[in-house]
Length: 206
Image (cartoon, rainbow, N blue to C red):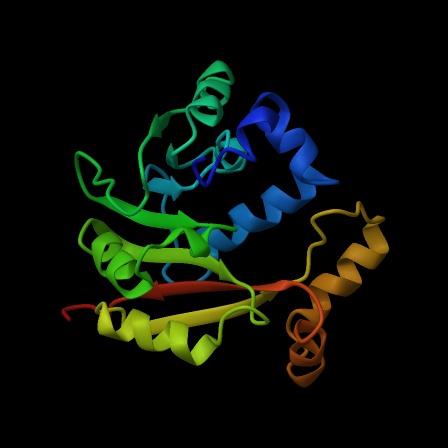
């Protein structure tokens, strides 16, 4: 059994069923992909590793989106939605030309060797790597150490308080978004729920 077998039967409606409010969740994720760390420009290419059916593409209309997923069923679903998606193992995939940003969401555990994956991605990513971290599963200082060893000497981190499995009314959603910047209260919340979004890049000229 492959590691993606449990997801493949859900491929036909992955984006619709994986999130209680896919639009709110993916729009916020896309916003951070664009602005956390070095800002992306119109026309920049975003390579989305472990992309599922490529639903993030719909929220990055000014960027060229390319998705990569190991599941053939997910790739087929993405192609049926008109998204540019290819089948490959994220640990081995190399795009035909460098990309400006690479993303990796809800999939850090697919790395055979996290430090090696960061170095691999860094070889073809010109501007930044953006990914999420569950701080209850991975220690942020260990992730930072692996990024530094792979040549990423700049890291920006932002709490991501958008529920995946619960749709929220506008006011509570705004309160949670404000809480992302609350410092110690946000760190307390992260001990029990939600994730961090990390953007990693190299100092210009390094």
